[in-house]
Image (cartoon, rainbow, N blue to C red; front, side, top):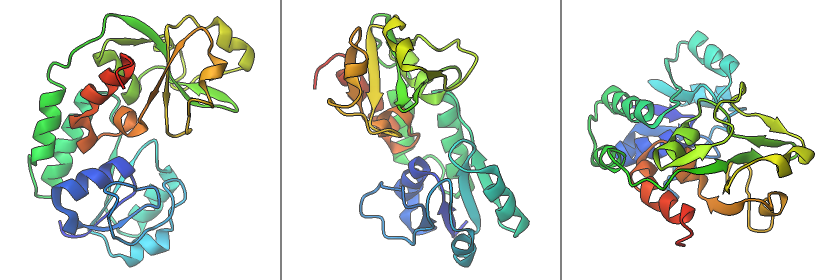
Length: 237
């Protein structure tokens, strides 16, 4: 494997940390590593497929949630292999990352060993109930079977919407005061919650602002995610 175009920001970081020379293209949203100098192919939802094809990739790396089925289908129809990921748990993500590195002929890089070690038995908080918004206007929260939900569960945080029928339930503004949670965990992506934009809507909860890269990305950030998230959840930063 010599030429990779990646349409997933977290996996762009993973590939770059494994062997930066493999990357020949990435999306406009691939922000890590910050000094990555490769051609950009547009957004994750609306990549410029002509630009992708012009880079002559040996494989395109995509994700079932972040990228559209029609783009994956179009690339495959053009003769380009597309490797699609869809982890919903930390264990699945670590396994997927191992398979990705093997696909790239770069098995077991140091960052992946560090990530596995970090999640082998991370310190847990006492059971604490939380709601995890990911968007507002309309409000959307984490529901069942999400990677970020599993990350928090492994740290002792119980998502109050974990058994909801939807993976990303929508809430009306009037629903928010009735949510029985101790914490409201507010990531900075996909919606950029801030101390002044988000916590005020959840007065019954202690706000915890976290890095989306540590909560939702699967890649090198997994190695430090337990420590960084635990500190934020405990109010130590």
